[in-house]
Length: 78
Image (cartoon, rainbow, N blue to C red; front, side, top):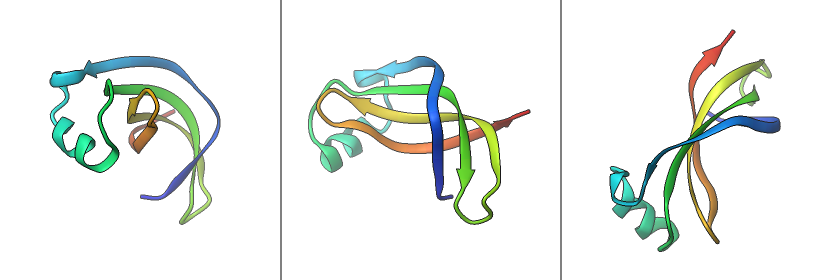
């Protein structure tokens, strides 16, 4: 599902760090080494397919020097 984040992400929490991440080997192969973290937060998103705008919990992976990768919407917040 393609989407854009509108504005900042807030209530950011770290879910897992380093070897606690299931997909660590895939992340390192695709984006390189780094101190990988799985994070979550709340953001306002716009779906590219329909243009619908809503608040959602988003999850992503992040590493210093690499940035935010593989964002996904986990659930809609009303």
